Length: 463
Image (cartoon, rainbow, N blue to C red):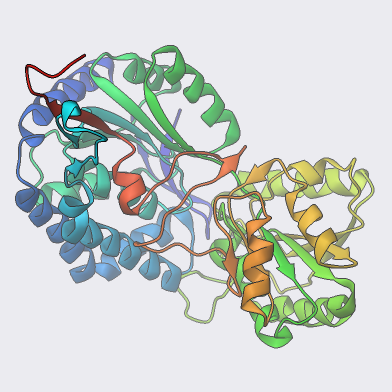
């Protein structure tokens, strides 16, 4: 596995990083375990200082950190700054809330013979985090902020195309005052990842990535009887009912599908529009997409970034061709495209039948799957006709109706009148082939702790 920085706007390779050696991995695991032995007993107040320091450093140097995101991943600079701020907000959230989220819980037992029972929450140990390239800082922050706050330690295997972002997170936590070894970035091979996961000192796995990687590593974690969380792909439905505010809904649809160049697990990938407003919606949506501007992601005028790599663009093209070969109709929006970089013109796919492989795939880029449905009931059926269950949204002026529809959609998250969003104080996660487990808030910090029962019982109490 080659770890290298390649600028998606120029396709220029900037820097290559060598894989970690077996000796380096052994040293890292030794350090992570030794750090855990002291970090687990460190007070919440001391841990909170480190988390707040990390937030403050990110904000004080937001331009420098954000430029690194744009360099390696290609996202437009404004989105890079938003990601850096979101990462800071996550660190700050746990600085303020970790202790009360893990406060011991007194249990209301049925009789005094059961004693005085409580549940305490103790860290498990060293965790392995395997993270993707599309949000190089946010994906790391949303696992290390809660888990370090809980008293665990973490080793990171980041995506191979964002090695400098991975190193920057490592350096950030050192600057923030985290003890040596408590968080470490590595550049392992696939085989070395498996060896790390198998090490007896590693107590859990948190993975965000593809179905294939998730299935493989979840299987290995299962064989080792280790807890894991999986945040995998998504094909979010964006349902437009006949009473939606069409102008605002179209604006959100254009944004929801094309932010981060469409490379988001919770992008609005499937637009499901009821018949009564379908024609007008599509007309306005096409117009909205046609106003996007491709270009240098550091240019404030750019609104559609290149994809993360030329391979990503080539693979997406093949995926669209496969959908067309199976009967879909593809409409390319003829945006002016730079003569360099991993750009991909937006595509709208229609005439999608049940047997089209596109119905079961995730399109990671600016490709819209568009469905015309007769009514609310069919919209729900189409939304649920997917192997994925991550996020989704419902647009209607009747909020109570929107909530009723949301309750019938088989996903981990549904938003009314907004595309699926990511915030520091909202949980994140899905069901079905989108994975299992939750990140952020109390749900995230409790994923990798031992919920231990302590019961003080009278020695004379009956069995």
